[in-house]
Structure formats: structure tokens, C-alpha cells
Length: 149
Image (cartoon, rainbow, N blue to C red; front, side, top):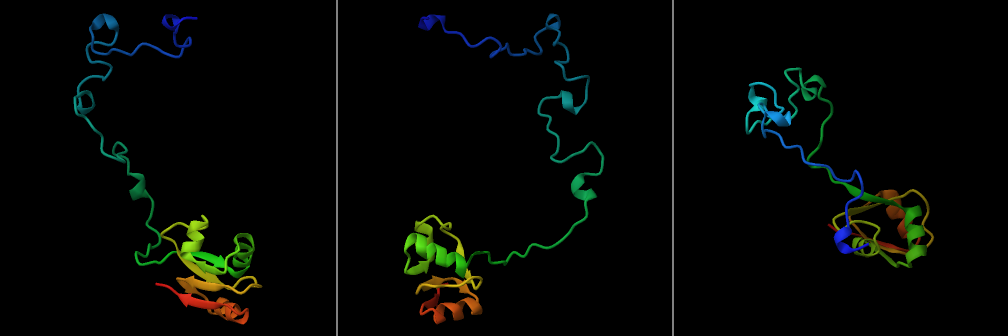
């Protein structure tokens, strides 16, 4: 095989449909756009979500619920998970920076500690929020808690 003999695989390419190039092509005249009306004209663009006069879906379906624009989303970690993380990564301090560097959270995540599970190791916490139960468990294990804003 030589460079000048290279061809695409059979059926991989096909001729472009050339519309509006005379009656003999079978696609002349109205260029497959039908007769008259906005859709046959240049620059036609249908409105987004227009359903041809039928009541659009966003108006057929009732409104439900409420999205609070002031909601604060936390990345939640339980004490059981913290114990596992401390064993795996050898942390002495749990902070957003440590967790981010090790790929456990995203850079903009806020961290909240909850009290599910038990903490066996002494750990310093520098987090955005912590529950009362978790705080009591950390201090009982000999650790400290600092709330970072």
C-alpha cells in the first residue's frame, strides 16, 4: 500500500446532499423546505420549548417546592469516617486544606463533622461546622476543635 492509494473504508463517507441546485437534482425548487411559511424562509428559528400551540410542558406541570438561595451546603464527615481517614492518611489534624490536598473534598467545599461512629485517635479539627455530639466525642478522645469561617 502506498500513500496515494489510501482511501476511507467502504461506506464511511458519502456525498453531501446538495439542495437547491436545479430541478434535475430532485431537490430544487423549494429545496426540501415545503411551500411558503416561516419555516421555508431564511433566518427561521423556532422559539425554545414551543410545542406548536399545545400547552408547553413547563406550563402543564404544577409548581412544587422552594429553593432557598441562602442555603449553606456542607461536605459532611462522620466520626467513623474520620477514624478511617486518620488511619489511612496518618492525619493529626483534620482541616479543609488537608482533605483537599489528599483529594477527599473539592477546594470550595465547607466541612461539617457529625457524631455518627466513634473516634479512637487524638485529632485536631479545623472545620467550618461541627455538631454538639461530635464536639463532645472529640474532646473526650483528647482532641481539640476550632471553627473556621
